[in-house]
Length: 382
Image 1 (cartoon, rainbow, N blue to C red):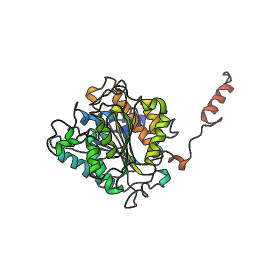
Image 2 (image 1 turned 135 degrees about the vertical axis):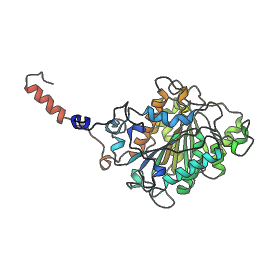
Image 3 (image 1 turned 180 degrees about the horizontal axis):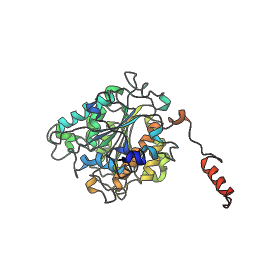
Image 4 (image 1 turned 180 degrees about the vertical axis):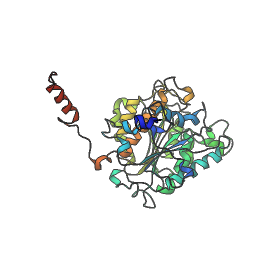
């Protein structure tokens, strides 16, 4: 009996079929397979037990992968990036999720740091020059390290990530897209009576600053529009090391002005980009734990991200996707997946064809030849 493969040949998964990984990427349980390595790693971190309002971000990694079902390596060419990031010479691997305890936050945070550090120490498939995003010149050990795209999870996951990155790069700059500052002192929260309970999705940058993980005066918030307690919150935020760009700033500065301000602030320092989905207006991304009206559009966010690709990015994330609050159309999950695709464009820009951009043919090519053939067979001139 003839099998399906023999009769129809090999076939790729359709957008709605197959095991769900990000963009149908190959998957390995990297934490259980020490030999697994890649230049870019997609990593889920399903932690959400340090939130102050609506929970559910533990289901974010799966939702973002579900939202990426129409992304795929064979149809990944991006017109704005002028390349396909999946075919840009960088190996990309979905390493699944870090197993984190939902019962013990101290344990979970240590699990995240341990796993992230393990993957960060893996060798890469390809070493790149600094001009093409290589990290060797930035790392304290002068070695090339993989870049990890983390799918949260609530925003607290950034604390153990920064601890891991600090071991490799020292204090780094943070580009923080969010509606909220996330630099509040832990004791400011009602009910935060123990040391561990003071580490939340709204205080982790305060904790990171105390530990010396953030480079002073080169970090930035973008998209801020939350309410504060007093002016002291702003003064404290400045002490932590951030400069604030609010949502309203885009009206005068435009996306290009936001890009320039961020680049001027960060400079050539190694930097980590953290994106809370609540940066986006809840009309376009409702599935999050602490939504705030008046956010940026997905198009504005994409324009800003595309302008930041020349920075020395050593890691990125997208956090606070809580799919229980999404629409039936999964608009938040799809928006988050689209942003991860932008991340891949940022990390691989210029790598395709030895740095040569694709140029459309003015004439000729297969389609032109087929049209000429049709004309010769009596069809109208094209």
